[in-house]
Image 1 (cartoon, rainbow, N blue to C red):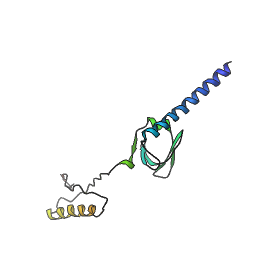
Image 2: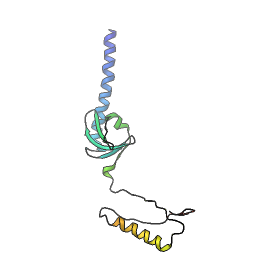
Image 3: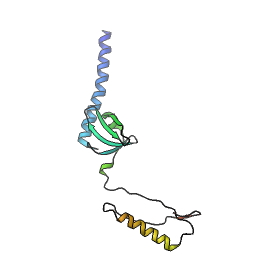
Image 4: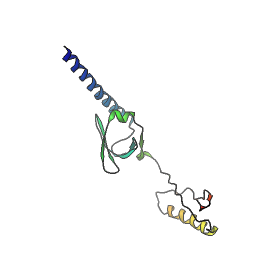
Length: 138
């Protein structure tokens, strides 16, 4: 009788994990935080979703490693979807020497703007000097 109770407990525990994975699979399908092909970040790692299965989701990391996540772990994780970002903001910090003339500073800012505008899929917002330090302009 004790053997039946122990095997029943084992089956119950193993089916609990399966049910959690299945529930999270259906939650992923219904909520669609990502689809196959999306670039996502999960648990501090970034990669492309290769497949979403009943129990696991496979993500190919940027270094080429294939990482397999249990769906229940994805259900409890914070996920960022990089494929759904309409644009990315890039801040480029550059230092200019303290003896740089106003003409050279203006020419530098105009050249930075022109360099960005050469790309049709980029949008230039601003080029400005943030502050002056003992080492020069930033």
